[in-house]
Length: 236
Image (cartoon, rainbow, N blue to C red):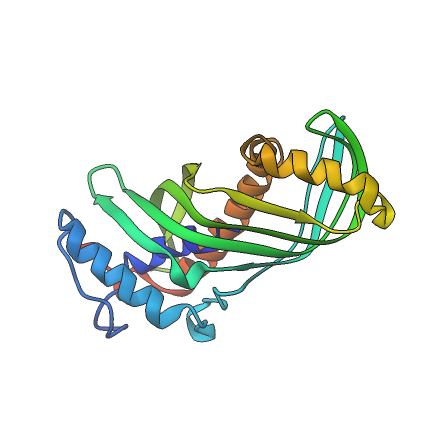
């Protein structure tokens, strides 16, 4: 769900002479950086193949799994909508320790197919069908460290590590269709429990999935950095 949160790390570094809608900013000028990043998202969310930027809304996630001893849960053909409507609340670049930190607020909706078998909130369940998960406000906090590497005399940036957290600022609606093989009588009570305890449900299944998504996102960002020399990027 979170490819956009890592992609904006690239946005914050782009050289305005190469991308005209990016405004150069001083490293301590957060309002300028936020404005520049917002302009970049507005112009880039449809995708820029020549920069290695995929379409950001919807995001094509594909397949993810979160299996443990109590619950086997997988998602496939996953698409995430809403990245183009994200708002940057804060962005800070710290040159002395090579980090960038950003806060985002996004409305997100994920669709696709799921399969599950095991205990959900201590209730035995199984199913295989379409899913629809959405929320109007999720807050994302991400901090990434980067370094400069050199190959054949050309310097590139590379993200080496990141930390993240998230806050579900509004209710998450969770729709799992075809639970119990389409037995609506059995499915209705568990869906009511899931949507009444939505925060516990997201915490139970969301953490590992978000980590997988961020790992994939960092991989995409590093592909972008490997294609663009430092000479075409700058930290102001």
